[in-house]
Length: 71
Image (cartoon, rainbow, N blue to C red):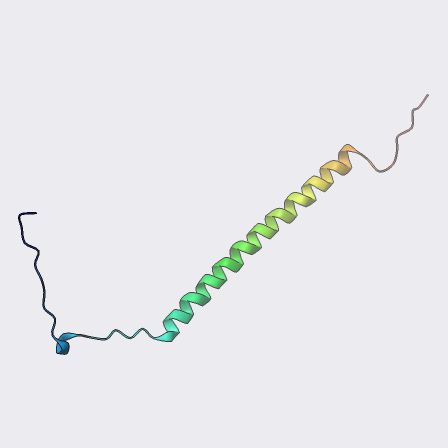
């Protein structure tokens, strides 16, 4: 706290306005949408695969045709 903070004086002529092109922002948004879409597809594929595997396991465990006793 004993050191004094340095203050930089900026004159009006030194100010530079930074202009960000709209295209860059749209490209970022598009890339983000594509990533979200890809992950969403992965999740839905995983869920569908789990459902199919569960259905197959239940069908194997409980067959549709009742088994009769051979006696």
